Each structure stands twice: as structure tokens, then as C-alpha cells.
Length: 273
Image (cartoon, rainbow, N blue to C red):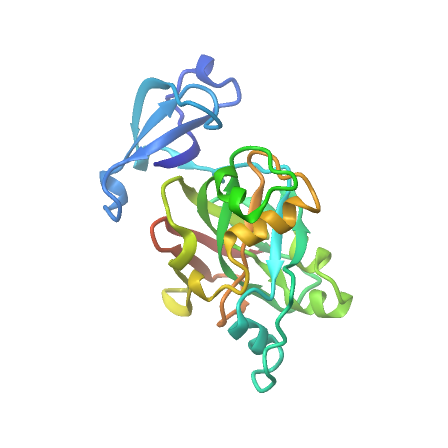
């Protein structure tokens, strides 16, 4: 099931005073977007779904970020080839025994079609294609065996990074925390095996990253268990699982697309702030 969050100008005000709606995207996987429809959900998707009976063509709605998380917990150095890439390509990958985690603020989250805004005080901003995990029910001190039962689904993400600021600061908060630096979408896929999915990034139609989640050092269950021992993961929280090799710079005028097998494509234009 593909769960979307969206706005539609013809939706009844009583259905959502803020104009923001939830729905499920209907149509065969891989079908042209023009062939897909959205079926309205009454309320939120964290529990049994009740449908309103409203349906719209996907082309007639504007997709938003599929969730507004209380926090985004991200992972660094989770693909050996990316670790080697960041070390200059010649050194052996220095792998971490435990996941290296950091936070991105909720204000960094945007949806597909929204603009990545380049900060004026950075000269090097990179794309990073990643599988994102959306938590479905609270997780605190869960075991690896329990972890997957706390997942609502998966979406695509771009862990946008001001690389010069990350290196200058020696930590991740500023370089990865700017508004618009966490595109996610286009929707949440609830029925998916995350163990071996193709992860790609393209800039202006040119393929730049091409990896698989099977290359992750720490898998999804391990990440959830580790993070939940540090902090309670709440429904709607998002986990970014790391990026494969091939990261690189983006500039104003570029268009970045992240594609995750079994989910779909997340596309964002790049503009100056």
C-alpha cells in the first residue's frame, strides 16, 4: 500500500480544515503517474484505515512530504564504498562497530517537487540518495527481532549535505540541518522487503549513484534496535539508512532525482536561497 499526504483544491474543507489530506495511491506499481489515483483516508494512517469514498487523479493533487516527523534520525558511514569515497578512495574503509547516528531537524523535511535551497554561506552542497524508514508505533529498547514490527513503511530520501560546513565543523548538525535539506517521498510504501533494494540518484537525468541496500553495514532492524536504545522512536519518525558511493555536488538549476526500487522517484529542483 502506498500512503500519500497531499493537498487538493477541490477537497471539502470539513475533511481537513488545513487542506492537508491523507490517501492511498492506487494503480499498478511502475505505472505512469497519469494512470494513478488517490483514495482519501479519514484521519491518519497510524491504525486501521477508513476511506472517505473520495478519489482524485494523482495528477490533480499536489504531493507533500509523506510525513512530518518529530525527528529524523540519520546514519553515517553505513556503506563501505561511501566510507572509502569520503576517505579519498585510496584508504581502506574504516567501518564502525556501531551505527554512527545524527539528527536532522523536522524543518529540513520537504516533499517531492519542492525546492532544495542552497545556503549562501556554503560552496559545496551534495546529494545523498537513501532508503528512509517510517516508524509506525512507538519503539523504545526494542530488540532486533522486534524491530520490524514497529515499521509503518518506507520512502525515498535525499540527505542533502553542505559538505564544506560538515568538514569545517567536524560534526553534522549545521551541514545537514538547513531548511529543505531532507527531501522525502513521493509516498510511503508499506509492503516492502528493505533487504536488497536498488538505490539510485540522478542529476539532470545523469545517473550518479547506483547501489543496493544489501550493501549496508547495519541493516534496518539493527538500526531501529540501536536507535531505540538511545531515544524513543515515535510514530511518523523517519530513519535515513545511509548512502552508497557516488555522492557529489549540486548547483542552482540542477534537478535531483532519488529512486528506490519498489517505491518510486523523489525529484527536487535546486535553487539559491
